[in-house]
Image (cartoon, rainbow over all chains, first blue to last red; front, side, top):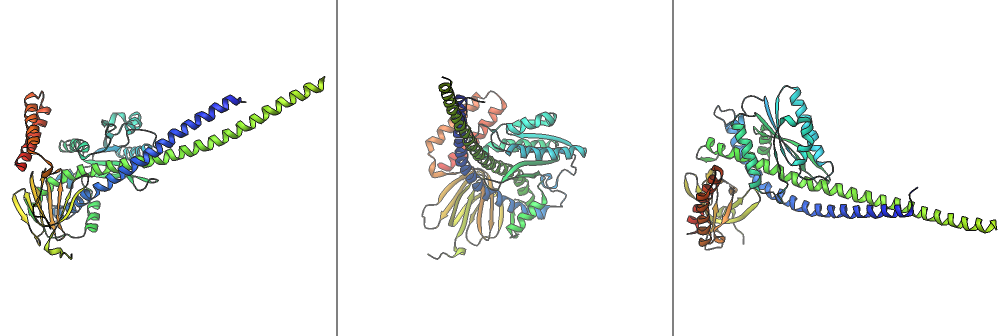
Length: 295
Length: 138
């Protein structure tokens, strides 16, 4: 049985851990607020963009000259999976659940005989994927040094994806990220970036409503050609902003749980400590009394 | 003040990061891909590209137009108003001529000192961007 001193030390160390988790929770809460604001501020642009593409895409789709970004390459043999995770740990099941979803999709594609390439954003996802799918990972982008995600941080990644697409290195690109619903729930989402998924466009059309007869300047096709690559960047940017908010939300919840667990542990340990202390006193008394009786 | 919607243009400027401007204007001058157009109330729906240049927004109740430098984007005119999707927008009033000239000078020096293709390309882009800005300021 542990001595009184041991117990006291253990209580002390759990208390310290509790202070750390409590602090991390509060930091995550304030970062969450900022990340959420950023995600909300980015929404108008992405929504307008979707609206424009919806009204344009419907008219262009099915034409022979349609951009491959909307029509696809005509094959779905080569897949690029973009896995967006965080750059830091201690955020509960956040990274694991994204990676799990990505792994499920990869296994499915491999079983169907497709070629799969993986692009990791964030070191945590890379660490979890490399043991099983290390040969498929083509690049790791670390955004750990970025404090506040700007569009200019994301643009190079998107441009790289686009140039790979032009070079014919893949046919379909999908993005795995956690959609932020609330601090408690984040939904792992598999979004198809390239080609632009039609259902999504139709949805936006339903929501956006007005399919007004626009005049185009220059032509419909030229505008669409300029707009579609931009759309890929914007969708990626939006996904990463959502991801950042989800990460902080998940961390906040995880640290809240940790703080509560530490509290439980402290009360249990204190109970054991007090019981041991009483046992020691009783033992001393018995020793004194039995010593006196022996005389 | 009951402002009739059709007498003004509802102007929105959005960048990927956030909504930058949301105002009512008497008219907006847009540097479209095929030349400038002045957008007045009751304009027909148009979808157009924007080339780097200055947008002039004549806000309701202001005598001087607000000038904004836009680095490429799209303009969508619908019955609801004008929406500009801009990659980057800078208020011209926030810029000083000497500052931009200084930066342009720096960029030119960077170009001369460039060691490889990447650096050269960056410097050239910066020069293009800054000379557009300089034109906007002067």
